[in-house]
Length: 179
Image 1 (cartoon, rainbow, N blue to C red):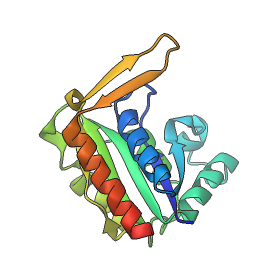
Image 2 (spheres, rainbow, N blue to C red):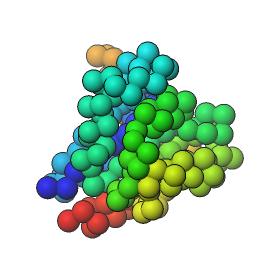
Image 3 (cartoon, rainbow, N blue to C red):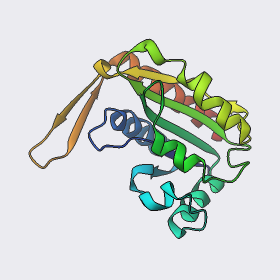
Image 4 (cartoon, rainbow, N blue to C red):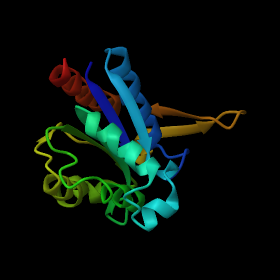
């Protein structure tokens, strides 16, 4: 069975990015694909900061990436780039960690001003690590996803129809590639 790993650089459970990630993960699972998620913010901070390549937690995350046929890389955009915590983890992957994997970029930002972050910040790093195949990119702005917190403290997200259609498009691309 094909496996997709979602690598999320979101630093917060309240990030609207999580609504996008949840939509993609649910769509892939409904199509029968095996999915796993690495929430980079849940990795041990000291392992990320001190580049502990031998950390059991980092090694386990790296094994998930190694076993994946495709990787959805999701991040909010801060200061015209993907999150630092995502970069800290990517630096701990093997040099050819993205070789022979289909990559699906999913990004969200405050405005359209930084939409080239995928082409000019993310793709060169991934290409240096062996990535050669990418789906279309989904880049959304904060105002296209609403966030509500229920009484239990859980966040619920409503995605604008046009963004949902684009997320469905990359999910379909992944499904077609992996089936």
